[in-house]
Image 1 (cartoon, rainbow, N blue to C red):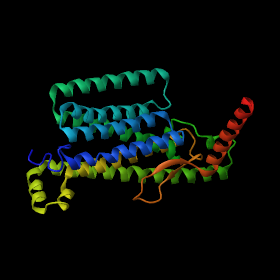
Image 2 (tube, helix red, strand yellow; image 1 turned 45 degrees about the vertical axis):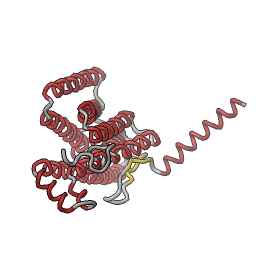
Image 3 (cartoon, rainbow, N blue to C red; image 1 turned 135 degrees about the vertical axis):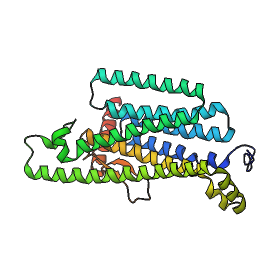
Image 4 (tube, helix red, strand yellow; image 1 turned 180 degrees about the vertical axis):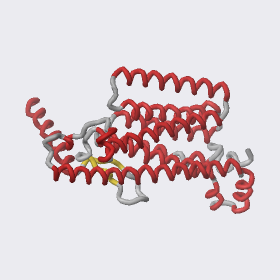
Length: 303
């Protein structure tokens, strides 16, 4: 392509390459958050997969080599399969989890081999879209039937401590109010993340459809403002943010399903900030105190 290597000999598509740094940064941020606040291990692996997507895309757009394209695109499939396992395996029997894991491994291998055989981007896009939609709608269903009080009575798949028979009526009402607040937070989080993701997909589709026209506009505008018309770059940024929001939503949902919603809080100062799930200050102090006390005891024993 005439626009390849226009900025440096070390990167074929400089904008599409650099926009993947967002994935790598958010991978580090999310992974540290998982380790610091003791989130389920499946989300740490998911963030590492998220980082692999960004790294693969970075290498592909730098080199335009086919092997790097496979790393870029297939890591998207593998990470989504991992989230599919996390979503469908929760509170299920051991046999169900084993069958699900085997089925998803078989599916990912099939997609890998068939995509390598076809080398058709449409097949990859359709497979990724179908997997993503399946995980998303399943997560929404699990969220609604397990957190919304009116639906829990009929469809709940988990039992929460505040539903114990000895819980007072006032405590039940307070907990129901808390559940509705959490549900509102979650819908805002997933709604914004999904809107950003789909917005990026729309820009990317328009960029593909009107490629020659957009390229001509970029040449007419020139640098640096012509960079704003790099539709694929916007796709990277917006899907990166949207996917990050989904992972944070998954972490928050998992803690609520584990009846630990009083130990954690969604730290989201405003809509233009990146959210994260952290321990509540009072629980953080207790946990640190226990850890420090344990360390002191070990020191005394060693002396």
